[in-house]
Image (cartoon, rainbow, N blue to C red):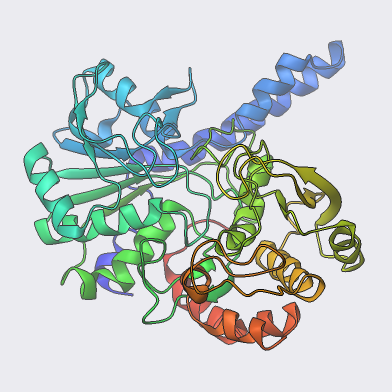
Amino acid sequence: MSDVNKDVSHSTLGRRGLLGAAGAGAATVLGAVAASSAHAAGSPTPSDLAAAKRRTVTPGADVAAADGWSIFAGRRIGVITNPTGVVRDGLRSIVDVMVESGKVEVGGVFGPEHGFRGTAQAGSSEGTYVDERTGVTVYDAYGASIDSFGTMFSAAKVDTIVFDIQDVGARFYTYIWTMYNAMAAAAKAGLRFVVLDRPNPVGGQAKGPVLQPGYTSGVGLDAIAQQHGMTAGEIARFFNGEFMPTVAGATIKQVQVVRVEGWNARRTFDATGLPWILPSPNMPTPTTAVLYPGTCLFEATNLSEGRGTTKPFELIGAPYVDFRWAERLQQATLPGVEFREAYFTPTFSKWLNTTCGGVQVHVDDPDAVDAILTATTMMTVARDLYPAKTWGGTGGAGATDGFDWRGDAGRWIDLLTGSDRFRTMFAAGASAQQIAAAWRSELAAFERRRRPYLIYNR
């Protein structure tokens, strides 16, 4: 790890970073005393318990807000955020709160996929416009290249870039790649970079294959694991140390991470006590996020991944699927999940207005789930139960009478898994366990590589 990265190994609010940690400890003790007193006089009320739960974890945005946004004093900032970038008090956008405070000079906002205010569906953005509430220009940053970011940063006349988005921990979730290109542009322009950190909702463990050369795309620009197991702050440090020297020709001299207080990376989102705000329209619950690093692979098949239902990435199926799939999957006894036979009719996306048979994946223990092994097992069982009579993987939506890849002879599954290995082993009849075993060595190497950049206990 370079000296540059050693300089950013801790929260950079200075004394506030230390006081924040001390304050969190003090709050815990005071909470315990209050609870004890309440118990002596009678059981704590539901509102007491709810308030204690809310104090469990404090995201970086709330830490910075409590400090009066002093980290941005004297700076003109550009903010990359979306509806998840809120302060806990009132659940209001950090941009709205910053502008109203009069303490932060916001030069521009950069909206990722789905937009700053979250009005756009998958694969769409809100465009560039002047935000009615704040008067700040919002730039369309979805799919923006390094050069495009550089142009937008120059137009906004900013000296510091701030990232605050709730990620979901999967390589193909596009927000981290928006951050990646923004970091490269910041490195080239000599700008500062600040991450107001949030928990990784699927915890801190890395899982799955690592992206290989030749398989980069908008859903994976560089070599990280399918479930990377890092917060946005940790992965920003990783990007800066490992990729920016090559991608941008320089590192960012000052990457600052305002840490999440009270978060343990061994736990999933349900343990945080924080409200879940949809990071995107098809990520409605923390349970969706737990399954997404695996069940998103169904996007590359002719099975519906549940888009157009109230349970995307939990309901999976197709018209040719019957009760046998649920039965076989239950027999697999995969950790943390159960499978229920289910039928659904998507209102948009694949199999529009067509009844699909399939399963609902029920999460019993989010901490035990291996989403990628779960999805791989689901796919291999579907392959064996429902072989397509008419293979349609050379284009379009695939076959309609059995399992098939969706479009371009499996290119999409290659991009999602990061190489052609998954697809070739799958076609050769390999089991889920055999496919998973093939990425163990590269995953171990990735875990070693990311270790110097981690912040939270695992």
